[in-house]
Length: 87
Image 1 (spheres, rainbow, N blue to C red):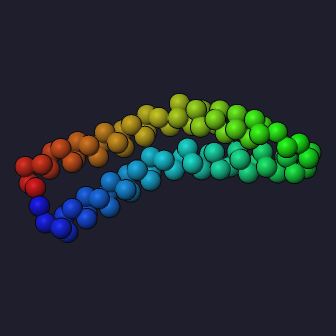
Image 2 (image 1 turned 90 degrees about the vertical axis):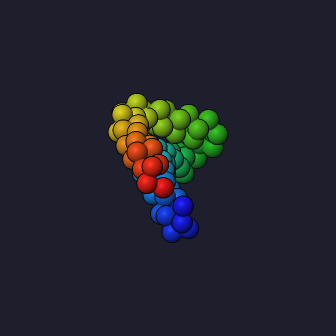
Image 3 (image 1 turned 30 degrees about the horizontal axis):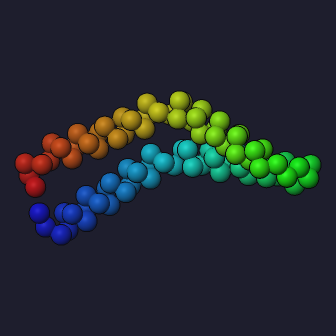
């Protein structure tokens, strides 16, 4: 296995990981921003007010987009395993 091919595989793996993590991170960021704005407006500084909605949003996103995430991960694994003889 050459160094260029290893770097290509690592870059592809990181890209797939970023695509898989992006919906949960973006959803948590959006909910966190909305809760922070709500806290500034109402001056409520409760720690559970930020944690629980983000957790609920992450679970909902995983339920809704979990199939897409798993199919993306599965396609990457199938491509990687099928290319083992060529390595």
